[in-house]
Amino acid sequence: MNIKKFYLNAEKTVIMKAYLLDQVESLQWCRKRPAILILPGGGYEYTSEREAEPIAMRYAAEGYNAFVLYYTCNARFPVAFHNAAYALYKIRMRADEFGIDPDKIAVWGASSGGHLAGCLATMWGDEDMLKAIGAAPEEVRPNAAVLSYPVISGITNPHKGSFEVLLGKDAPHSQLSRLSLENRVTPKTPPIFIWCTANDDCVPAHNSLVMAKACVSNKVPVELHMFDAGPHGLSTCDKVTDWNEYFYLDNVKAWIDLSVKFLAKYMNV
Image (cartoon, rainbow, N blue to C red):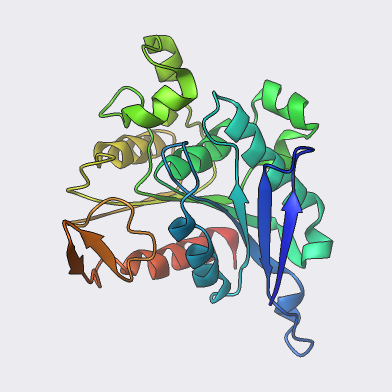
């Protein structure tokens, strides 16, 4: 595996790390691997390391070339969205260099990173974004999305911290509604895999439910898994701490294999 770092802005504050698997000459499918762009959470205030490389390693084990984006935080919308769109655009435009199939690029996000991934999945045709990064809509559209305990709605059981960073305090209903992703789903939204836990007390499970409902209403392929229990921010579910006790969440760990199967089905991996 080769690990490379790229700076995506002149100030070198937006960083993308690429985890590129070695090519195996005797295995032709290795020449064009599927890819996944990973957007860590952190309430749009920071990018969580536990939702960065650990996730990249899991998908790399499944044959994906993985890209982790450290996007701009503590900035109003659409700064992070433009970062993510530009990252996906660059991955697709440099597909030959990265040894990936440009038609098999998924996006993964957790918590607020799930909101950012959902923005890519639903707002890839945004004219202002396309003009800002100099891309065509099809060059930015992900082929599928995986949303882990995502922030979705600024209206229905919102994660207030994320929307305060994006829009400021006391943002009007119209702005909150515009960034509520259940309102942005269309029949052209790519297939979406969603998972959460029922008792998440940070980002309520209602967020996942309204997103899945919007996908169903628009006939977008969607798979939703709500596990019975588990704290927010589970990442790979290997070992987490909550109230100073350790829990092994073997049942929730299933999300990884389930998402891989979903991506294989809808991206023909």
